[in-house]
Structure formats: structure tokens, C-alpha cells
Length: 171
Image (cartoon, rainbow, N blue to C red; front, side, top):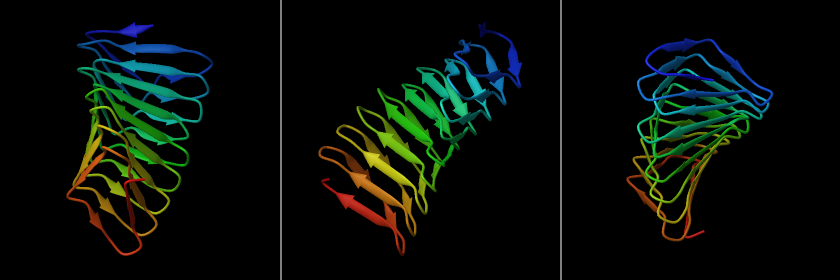
């Protein structure tokens, strides 16, 4: 099902449930797990994406304040703001997607590729940021136990590597 021009709040998506937020629509506090899928072309706030859940954010879509713990968020031309990634959560950024003010820790992974960009990320203990070909990251803080891996043709600028942080170049 889908929403456009209205607000959906508090939905639980699992077992192959598929929910779409169209342009002009918004969703709040959606819980996504175990085969549930949310497709966002409007505005989504405070989603919780746990194991087996998937949130796709497309061009014009904005996901703000999402928490990824075992689930996956894919920014394919859309934007992610103030996302928290941990406990096996994965954020994939590509095709002009952009992530701002992301915190990655404790088993969380942020992958950036193919014209994706991440700015002002915090990579903390147990968190990993991978920058693949044509991906870029700017103003990233890498603190103790966090890792940033920059692969061939990936771009990292303005990174701050704090005590115990790791930056691997040309992986």
C-alpha cells in the first residue's frame, strides 16, 4: 500500500509487507523488519529498520532520524539525515544519494559508491565506512575502534582520525 498527500504513523512492516511513501506523502515511526520493505519518495522520519528489513530512498525522498540495527537502508538518489547505524545495520549510498550527520558504530557499515556522498559522519568503535569507486566522503570523524576504507577511485576529504581510529587508503 502507499500514502500520498497524507501522513502514515506507527506502521509495522514485516513478512513481505511493502509500503510506499510517494511524493507529497510522509511517514513517521515506521518499524521495518523480517522481509518488510518501505520505499520512500516523500518524507520519512524516525524509522526503525531491524534484521531483514529494507528501506529504499529514491530521488526526492528524505529519510530523517532512521535507526538501522540489522536492517538495510539504500539511498538511491535520495537523502538520509541523522541516521544511526549499528548491530549489523547497513547503509548503501549510490546514484546521487547523500547522507548527512550519520553515526556508525558497533557492527554498523556505511557503503558509498557510484556518485554517492556522505558528509559529517561519525565512525565510532566497531563502525566501518567503505568508500568505493566514484563515492566520496567529506568531514568524517574516525574515533577509537572505527575504520574508514578508501578503495580505488574513492574520495575521502577532510577526515579527522582520532586516537585509535583507522583510515585505510587504496584498499
